[in-house]
Image (cartoon, rainbow, N blue to C red; front, top):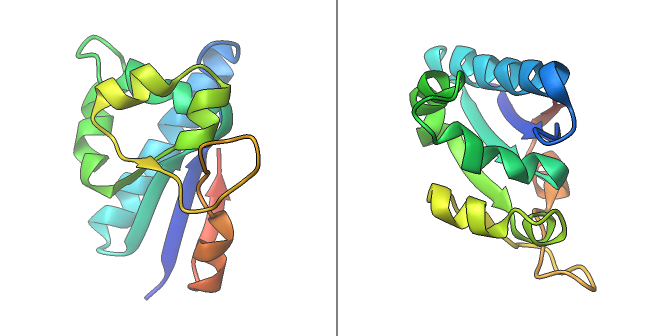
Length: 125
């Protein structure tokens, strides 16, 4: 069985409709893989760490889709959330702040290479 890690880098603050489209496609792919009972992790990295604060809002157009895959969200890159000013929103969303790799000048980041080491495909949006 295949394993996939889906990484959201798109920026809701500056990406406009394209950023929203990338988020939707990441959520849709997560749902499709979940429905096929495949192993899938969704993570928010870089400027994408700004999304969790938005998609937990009931009025957000991606909220229902997000809720459908919330159990597949591994979390938010802690160091990225700090750098992009998204820590408070990420914490308020209730998602895990991941810091499994020490990087100087950060509180720690997601180690994407771990996914590769474990045989995951990486798909980025």
